[in-house]
Length: 104
Image (cartoon, rainbow, N blue to C red; front, side, top):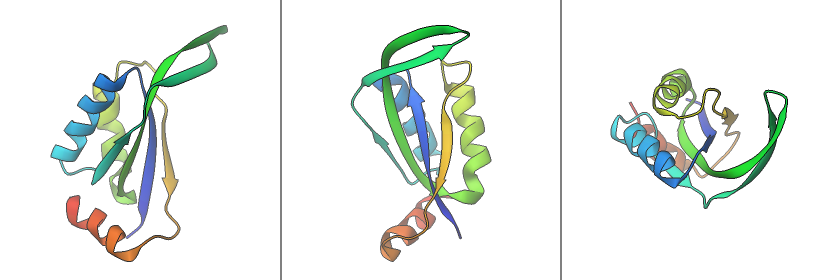
């Protein structure tokens, strides 16, 4: 079964932790890593923006992506959150098995 990492941007640490806890408790992701806030520079609706954001990386099975994406969208404060799946092409087999055991 394929594994993926899901890269997500959140408005702050509290939002990232709230979403991560929800996804782990529902067994949709095995683990969430929440990175320290950082600066983001981007254009939104034609205007240059800059602000603090928090990165979250989720570990799960590829078959769960749509459920995870829907849950994030329902809980996220952004109108258009960054939610990107990256395939895991190789990994430590015991760790990959653990992802399967922790998710539905």
